[in-house]
Length: 132
Image 1: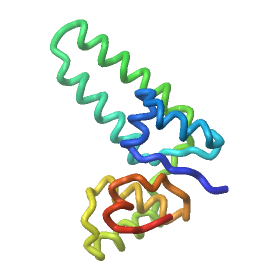
Image 2: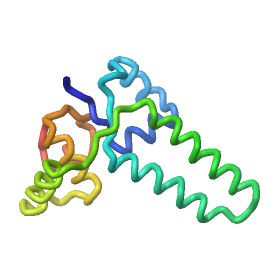
Image 3: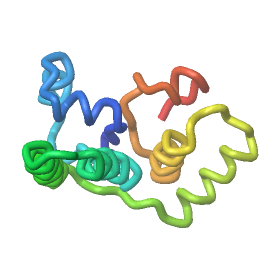
Image 4: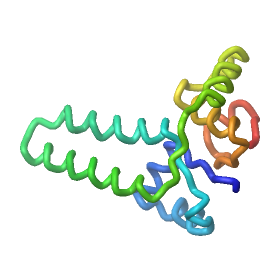
């Protein structure tokens, strides 16, 4: 089974219901769409940051509502972990001095370690020329 791994940027666009992203993802079997635990972390950290910054009752309520909405949204995707194979792949990438952010590199390592397809519009694949 080949999974399409959605990176954080595209997942955010999908959550915001951007039409061109929704059209693309509607063409895929939802059973084969996945996110990595790294993307999950980024999404949740963003929501927790908003909760921490909230300085009024209304903002606190809104921030918790968005956290709940994000949790509900993320449930629909397969979740792929960062295991020892991904860690080994990540460390190989680091030794190659690939100039990509740590979290993007971890997402790529997860994809490469599982030989999965990944949307190719991300910065990682544009900068490195890697194709999965």
